[in-house]
Amino acid sequence: MEIRLFTEQDAQTLWDLRMLALETDPWSFVDSPEELRAMSVQEFATRLRADHAENFIVGAFEQRVAVGMVG
Image (tube, rainbow, N blue to C red):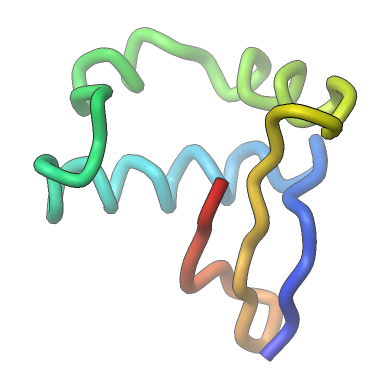
């Protein structure tokens, strides 16, 4: 298992993982699936490209597949 920061190259992977999380465990998030659908993958990439000093997302990857996240 690899643990690392999500980068802008992981934007689609993170978007997909977050959608799955929102749909399967909605009480764990402030956002809703509808709010995520309104956000483009490019916007996710822009956020991931920003300085990670105050806001970052760490991913758990198993054989290059994202299986978890925390931020």
